Length: 153
Image (tube, rainbow, N blue to C red; front, side, top):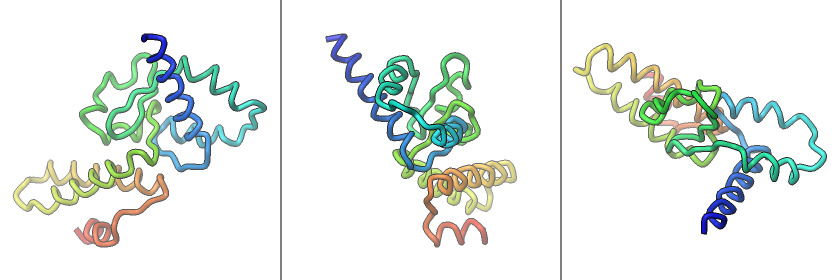
């Protein structure tokens, strides 16, 4: 049974990494590096994936993929999603587009609260920009009404 689970995990990683090597837009520090590496020709992609995937550390965070092998952020990105896009160990693909749209919407809602105070507003503005950058990096855009509201705030 353990071998079956290990085999399924390896197959999942191969499929995931292969999707990253295709033309889909990626965000995050590692995502940007992967996009750059696509320019390097590979003779046997299947062999590369078969050798790489079993050794790759890939964890879903709910808002991206973490490929840190040792230190990384120590898990802080699990609780603070907007830390991940700037992390050199993160890959954000289209799987998480809905999550980043939701983060964007939540920050807009926070900015509408008039008595929340300057710290909340400042944090919401920062996180709104991070979410918008991720959405744009994925080749998407927020709803026009949402983007206009964020700009006109």
